Length: 265
Image (tube, rainbow, N blue to C red; front, side, top):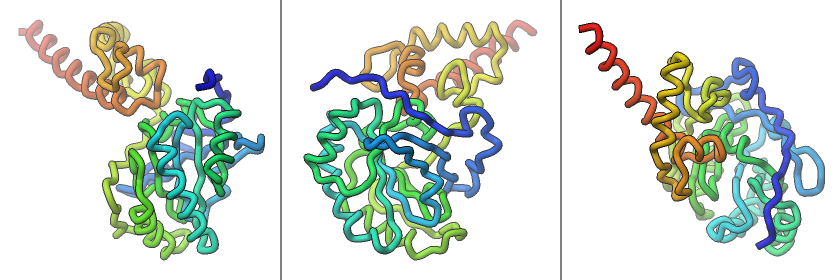
């Protein structure tokens, strides 16, 4: 396997700086997709906002992931069948080197745009494993999130529903096919946190240091064998670490509140 090199992507993501400029929670269950701009494998910028009005199948993958490679032919077939009806498949290879991605593109006869992303991009989409596929409607909202290889029938079912709507209309009765996970995009506090993915705005400086000690003692359950705090900082896209970090914060706040009450009495 070729040595991976760090890909410096040009992410135009308002969420990193001013989340109020993004209507993240436009719908109760269908948040608006983050605005991103990333380089494709030809050196051009791929701007997700230019796909507004189309149904987008956004697939995050890596070249060394076997389920990712198994899924790609399904995405190729999906693009063939629905291109003329307004569907666009987009692949984003995360933390992968350009030569490997280009070779895979040719080997698997990929017929849709493929761009390069980094772990910060994964954090903007709420964290995920590989592969992960998001279905985005004509209105720019995310309707489903599939973690793991997804078969063509599931993607077709969801695409058919979304293609039947107008650009401005939210599909309130959308029915996810297969196993779709909740779409939970991060808040500005979580994105810009000193503990990536965890909103620590409730903590004072002393509490923050104590909370970090807790995270340093806890091991992440994603299989990385790193301390939870280390995993959060080094892999901000790790869904396991983000969930565990939030659970640890909730428990920390409860314990700290009880401790304070006992001191008062």
